[in-house]
Length: 309
Image (tube, rainbow, N blue to C red; front, side, top):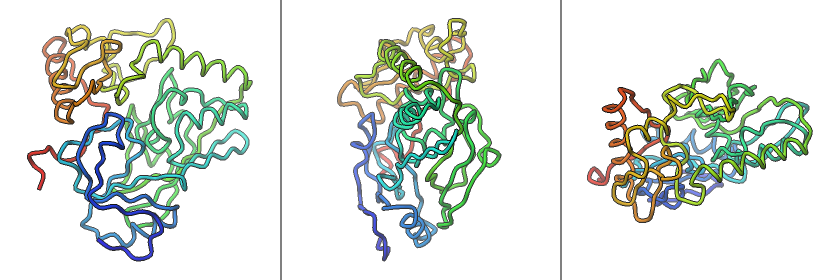
């Protein structure tokens, strides 16, 4: 495939395993890393309509199956990671890391501290309505910009995205390029202290040193942990997994973490099939034990190895 006039990097048959936090998966037909928004617009407007695209962040919440992905993966880089602050509004490029946005906002006395411990980038955070400690992207969202599959640049509202728990409605093939969030004021030192406490708690309760993709399943309760003393645990994913006796369960090199049972980890040498098989086993056994159906929070894309062409 040749598209004249692009300034970014287009790579054929790009192995995606090294681009995901779980370090598994096959190759994409192509990987495109646009130089900037105009380059992305040019690329999409000239890409044949029968070629699928898959926007990919930093791969923190993703399993790419072993047979790879029959699509052009769009991965945004330095041209999309600027962070600008104007009054109580923070505008961040889709490639800006959530943690960096939280820190930058705190330096300016703005409270987006809930983003500090969320893995990934702002594009993914908006797409998944990421949240923790009782706050979600939807609570702060002002607007976002996207490039459509046809290459047009458009502003989108909360009404367009229809925020729900861990999901939004985004047009097929659209690529988020930036988002503007509204933040309340706070003392920089107090915000920094809060984030430090959040990081300490995260490291104490989650397998942050392991290869994981964050929470594997959405909470059946339909909301994230609040971090407060009165937080209800009965319908949390980790609790129903524990109740089914699945903490530490393994398939090949895949394991439900002993430290946090809703974190799936690659202990070394796991395939994407190992991880997905383990996840489906957990879903079946939790349903058998509690009647609750766990929904995947990790996105799974691509072809199983035996379907690769």
